[in-house]
Image (cartoon, rainbow, N blue to C red; front, side, top):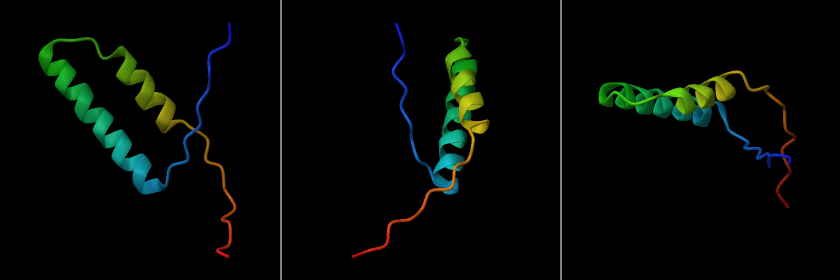
Length: 60
């Protein structure tokens, strides 16, 4: 069975905020003594994601 893939278009600012939030979540989990594996995977995927230029659609 195939996993459903979801694509998200983020600006540089949104990507930075998302990574910052995930690192804060990871720090909270470490303080609680919980596993951080899933958060680590997300941080890696977002940080290493390819950048694709998207054409902007002109306003009508």
